[in-house]
Length: 284
Image 1 (cartoon, rainbow, N blue to C red):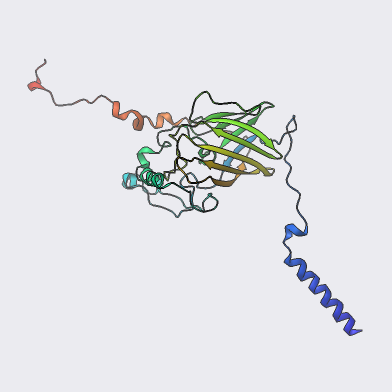
Image 2 (image 1 turned 180 degrees about the vertical axis):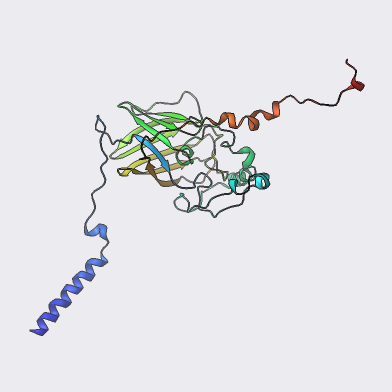
C-alpha cells in the first residue's frame, strides 16, 4: 500500500514538473487583445498618446551623456543626455560607411544643426517618440495625427493608396487595417529631418512602414520599419509601447516653437549697427 502511494506521488510530481517546463503560452494561449470598436467596426485608437522613453535623444541604447561643449557652461545638466535601453531591434542601425561618418558629423554639430533646435516639423517616425504627446482622431475615411510639437499634423488616407504631389516634412501616409493593427505606409518625406538628437538621419529615399497595435485599454505597441538604400545597408526596425493619457481632461497643449527659435533661424540676418561714428563724426 505504501509503495502504491509513493508511486502515485512520484507520478504526480513528474507530471507537475513536466507541465512547469512547458512555456505558459504553450499550456494555454492567451486570446489576443481586442480593442473597443468605432461606429464602423474598426479598432478605436482615438485619444492622446505618448511614448515613455528617451529615444528622441538616441534610438540606440546609450548611457547618460555630457551636454555638448557649446552649452556645457551655460545650461549644465539641462542639455545632458538621459540614458535609455534603446528601441532598435537586432543590433546597431546598419549605416553604409559614408553615411555613418555623416551621422558622426551630425552628432558633433547637433546643437546648431538638429532640426528640432530650429522647430522644423519632426517627420516620421520621430514625431511619435518626441517628449510631447500626440492625438489620434479617427473618421470613417481618414485618420488624423495631431502632434503637440510644432503643431505638426498629418492625415492618413484610409482609402485606395494615393501618391504625394510633392515631398513634405511629414510625408505622405496611406493606411490600412490588418486585423487589430493600423498599418501606415509613409513616403515622400524631405531629407532634412533627423531620427533623434544623436544625428541619425536619412535621405530622400526614406520609406517607413508603421504599425500601431492595441495591447490593452490604454497601451498599444508601435513598430516602424525603416528602408533607405542610399543610407542603410538593409531595412531596420524600432519598436516601443505607447501610453494613452488617462488624466481628467487630457488634451494637447500649444507648443508652436518657432518664436523660441527665431534667434537661431534669423539672428544672422539682423542688421549690424556700430556705435562708433564714421568719418570723425561728420555726416556724409
